[in-house]
Amino acid sequence: MAATKQFCTFYLDNLYFGIDVDSVQEVLRYEEMTPVPLACREISGLINLRGLIVPAIDLRKRLGYSDLPEGEHPMNVVCKINNEPVSLLVDRIGDVIDVEEDLFEDAPETVVGRAREVIVGIYKLPETLLLYLDQEKVLEDL
Image (tube, rainbow, N blue to C red; front, side):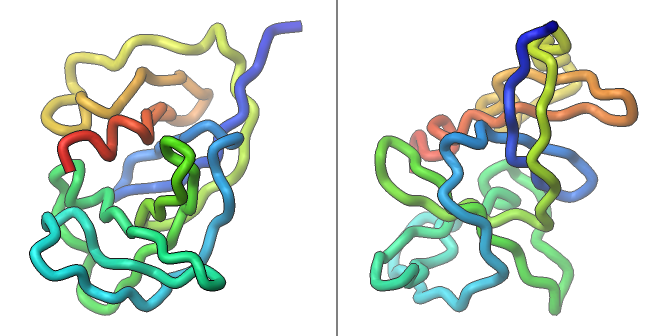
């Protein structure tokens, strides 16, 4: 039996991403945010998660994609990054999936720009590619 890795999956634009499920604390619908004056544009604000103040990072902006269409709201994937809770704002949530580790490959040359910096590699699934996101690298240089 092949070794597997478990991912929490989500979508940005038409791309399918996954992060290690062990780092995910919870998934939430859109939460109102408090803006942070003078913060970089990738930080959308702060959310109050049952009394815990959590920064919300807009992955669309972080990876260089255009904003969500007017009237659409992102979802929150709250995960522990460097032992601190951080909300990653994504378009929509996928499933928790098990992926065979032998399907892993380095990121192809077609992954460019900021995405290349935060993508560990890909998993070739039967109907799509799963982009394996290194959530710690998402926070670098913020």
